[in-house]
Image (cartoon, rainbow, N blue to C red; front, side, top):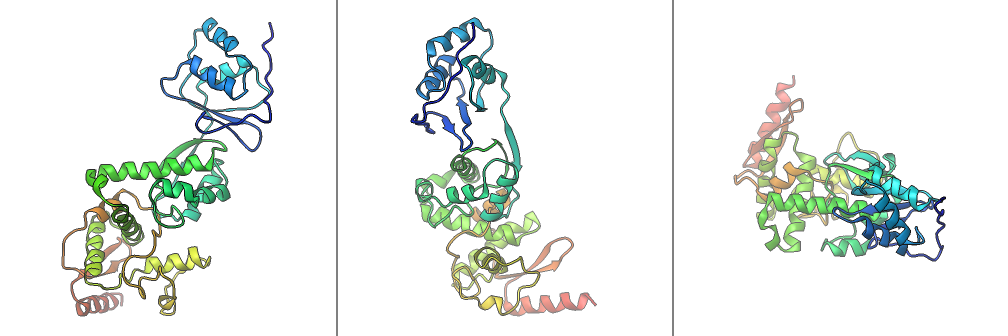
Length: 327
């Protein structure tokens, strides 16, 4: 007996709640939840209009010894119930790997997902700037810059950008809870300040054991009402706000750019994060090292080591010694 090939009613509604989503190309993403029975999947397929009768579906499942497997599957129509069943028992998810490096900006992150074939950069940025998603996580600001955790991910091709973004921000808050189990008693403002600080540290440190010292320096400067004076924030203005190429050198004129992200002019933290911080930077921001240092400068470009100092005179003297040692 030939199983009926199903066509979908164009008025059928597909939703994330039903875990069946229609892609722009007419294909579908079907989520099989962990521990879900074949009967439950059949009911969802019927409601979505992908099969005509779940009773025929149940018959197929009873006659076969295979079990459907947890995962996300891409279904192309037309497809019979038998073909859909074979897809879900195969375990052959269409997954694309993408590795997001620490310290990248939202715009660059969008490019990684587009290059991996997971979602377009445009849709990714739209999702990351969606007020509903931002408000859902209690994030201040107009985007989720800094709140999407850099990691290695596996997603199906042409996955909904909203779900990609939610996966990354869920990962961030999961990591924050492991770093500091007391995060649940922190206010949204306190968490935001930590993420912003971590995003700056991420772009400043090169040796992991110096990250918490840098966090201490920035914390001391904030406590003394001093400007943070982070070149990384000026670079962010140039590349992400002004849309210019990454500068090889920061000039004095750059330090005078009138923008709230310019920590040479405006005291306190910038309005939002400037990069995607990783574990080291997030941990440093949560637990800054307690010192009296107020300054640091790069002393060894090869190793990435910095010199930390308490006074401005010491900071200047360190720079002069470094200059002399180069000749």
